[in-house]
Image (cartoon, rainbow, N blue to C red; front, side, top):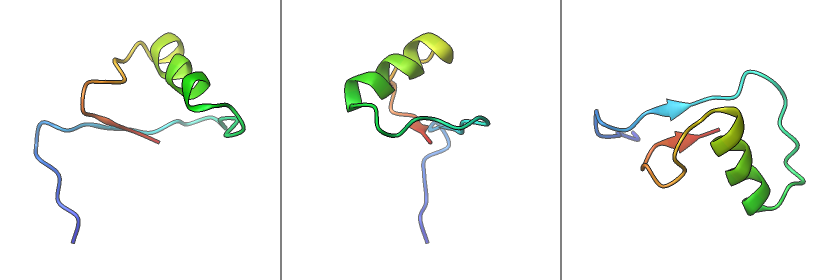
Length: 45
């Protein structure tokens, strides 16, 4: 069983994401498209 603390959010993309982007490109997508802080401790998929 995989348990997460209640403070951790899991953010899921509802549209396809180009996984060929580098980690920097994916982090930029999270920041610009979703307005989320990539260092918040939340999970992005």
